[in-house]
Each structure stands twice: as structure tokens, then as C-alpha cells.
Length: 564
Image (tube, rainbow, N blue to C red; front, side, top):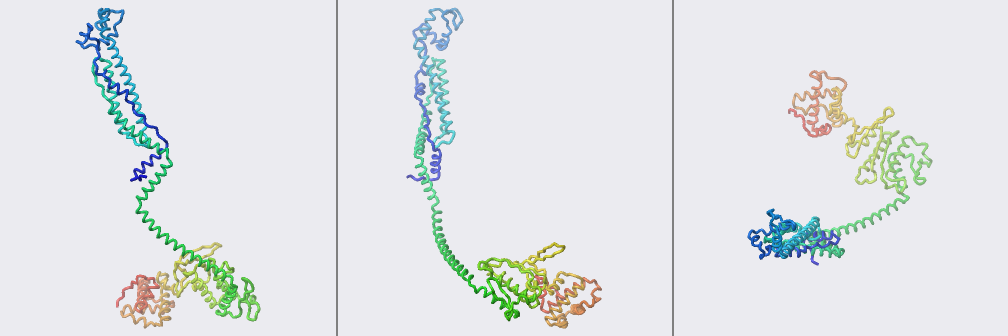
């Protein structure tokens, strides 16, 4: 099999198969009769009457043979009037002379010219019709080679020659005495015949394809694939190389997946076996009783009585359910809930995902137990936030108790902002509940934070700001830091600043008991701004400016410039 060299060969072969029906051969031109007429000697022959007739010399001298021949038809047998001169000159002798001049040979040649002219008209019309049909057929695409442009060009040239020859032959028919040359059309006709022969050969090849269509389609597929593979050999080689590597990788991964699945199946079987161990209940009871003892509840303990059921007993073995205080009931209930969050009532529920909701677990509890409950809640919060947690999906805590809220939401005495936490306030008025979302900002502040917030936002009157400054200095410097007025004042060397600081300390010492008159001489807000500046300087000069910046959210740490 000869392979296609390029895409054009493939396309040509494909197009030939698209026309799956056989095609008829193109009718070729049969020019034999036409050529005989064109090559007849009659066209160059001078056709005149006999030379030995008396009137022949005059006719030949005047070269009026054709004119006389045309007028003979107008001579009437019973009329002596001449059709030429209109005189009474026609007699029997003249008639006989004309008949002898235009003898049988002349008549036969004249008839031959007319017959050949008629035949040429018929042959020309047939050839023109054939050419028009061939052009019409090949105006549409065909599944074989046919040069329609060249065919139309040569056809036009042939038609011009045919028309010229017809005019020449008509002239000969009118003037038999003239010798005329007829154009030969053999060159044009032979060129057209060659085009038709080549096309018929292509048609035969096409018909052979149609006769073996299934084999031809199979060959086309082979040719196309062979061409495609060769044209993309580099790409295919690269693909096969990468595929081989990927297959090896996939095989290794699948093998690893199989090993992992086997391990998972084994672990799940172990987990199922462990879930059925009855000591799970005993372990939970032991944990609860240990918690009761560690928190000082020594008057009762919890014991299992049947599946998922427990009873409280006193030390003497009597049931304790009727003698427990409200606080004890609340605490033991929360303690049971705390351990239930880590386990489950059934084997199948131990590892299920869960959302935990805790609603005010601290009613009727003293401050010590409230702290214990808060610690347990913090432990749950820690588990929920842990990266290792895959079971606790959400924790919702509801409370009316500000102290409990502070215990579980404040870290190191500060309200913390985390992206995993949302704060909400629910208010009920006139049987309607409104909800306010604070996102991750804790709306509850510690007392110390609220003092700083008032200074930061300049909230309240000068008296309120005075009280906030007093309480901050008392708590931070005097109570926690053990510093006196002298310790603070000694850091100011500038007499003016020292005077203002001393005035502030007096203001602090006065507190809410009195309002110094000198604060309001030049306008209260201007004086408050001045004391704010000195308040900041106290932290800066005592080496505690970082605490000031943290509490005032001063991220730029731009300090007010003070004279030294």
C-alpha cells in the first residue's frame, strides 16, 4: 500500500468517498460529420454555368452568374417579360440558353452547398448543446478531476469558430461563384475531447472505489492513522513516556491506598470491639466520682444500676436523691453532662459529630463551684478549638450571669478576640426577642478595661474622667505596683510638668470627694487634655509606657513629646 504523503492527499481521497454513488461517463464529442463538412472542397470551388453556351461569355465577363441564377427563378413560362430589364425579351431560345447554362452539374453543386449548410447547422447545435450540458453538470462539485475553467474557455473559442463557419457557408450558399475558406475546428474539439477522456478515467477510478466502498473506507482509516501517527510522532513518544511513569505512580498509590484501607478496617474493628467493653460505663462512673471528691463533694457518690442509668448514694448506702441541695443537683447534673459530651449513651454514638449547647449551668452554685464549672466549660472550649478535634463541630453557651461570662471568655483578665468565636446579645421586651451580633468582639469588659475604654474614647464628663484616672493609678501603681506619690513625682524634672503632675495627684487623691476649682479657670476641656498628656507621661517616665499603649490601643507608639 502506498501511503499518503500529506494532508491534501488524505482530503482528496476522503472527498471521493463522500460521493458514494457511481457516476456516468461524460459524453464525448463526435466531430466526424462536422470535420467532413468543413473539409469539403465545395467551399473553395467556383460554381458557375457551362462555358459553351452562347450567353456564358457575357455572364462570365460581367461576373453575374450568381445574380442571373437568382433571377431565373422569377422567369415565368407564359410571360415574356424579363425579370431583369422588364422588357418583352424572354423567348423560348433565351429560356433554353439559361437552362443549358445552369445545367445539372450546377444544380447538384448548389444543392450540395445547401445540404452541407443544413447539416453543419445541425451538427453545431448538437455540439453546443452537449458543451452546455457538460458545463452545467460540472458547475457543482464532482468527485473526480475536471478542469471546468479550461473547458469553458475552449468551448467559447469553439463556438466562435462554429459561428464564423456558418456565416461563411451561408455566404457560399448565396454566392456559389465565390471561393471561400472554412475554418477547421479540430484543434478546439481535440482539446475538449482530451479533457473529457481524462475526466472519464477519473470517473472510472471513482466508480471502482464505490464498487469497493467498504475496502476503500478501511484503507482511508489506515491512511489517516498512518499520517496522523507520523505527523505527531514526537508528541506521542512524549505522551507514552509520561504515561508509563504515571501508570507506575498510580499503581504505587493504589497499593498504598489498599494498605491504608486495610489499616482503617483493622482500626475500625478494634474500635468496635472497644466500644462493646462494659468497663466503659464503670470508667465514666469512676471519673465522675473522682471529680466529686476533687471538688469537695464527699457526701454522696454515683453508682450504675443498669445500662445508661445511674443512682446517687450516701456514704451509708441510702439513696441521696431526696436530700441533695439545689446546688448539688445542679452540679452533679452538669458533671454528668460534661462526661456525656466526651462519650455517648450507645456504642454507635460515641464517635458521632455533635453540637454542644450549655445554658446557664451555674444557678444556685456558690462562687467556688461556679469557678469549677467555669473551668470545666473552658476545658470543653479548649477541646472544641483543638486541631485534633474532629467530633465537636460547634459550642453554644447561653448565660445571664456576667461573672460566669467573664470566667469563660476572659483570658488573663482580658477579653480576647478570635475569628472562631462570635458574641451575641439576646434581649426580650414586650414578648419580642431581639438579637445583636458583635461578631468576635466581646461586648463585656472587665472593670479595669472599662476604665481605660472611657479614657480612650473620652467618654463622660471631666468628673468621670477624673475618677477613671484615679482608679487606674490606684490599681496599677499603688495597689499592684506599691508606688507612692513621691515615686511618681520624682520622675518629672521639669518644674512645670512636675507642678501639673502634682496637681493631677491632688486630683487623684481628691477623687470624687471634691472638685478643684483651678481645673475650670481656663475651660474644663483644655485642662482635661493637659492632664491626659501628663497621665501618659506618668507611664512613660516610670517605664510602663508599653502597658499604656496596650490599653489605649496605641499601635503606632507615638508618644507626646515632653520637655526634659
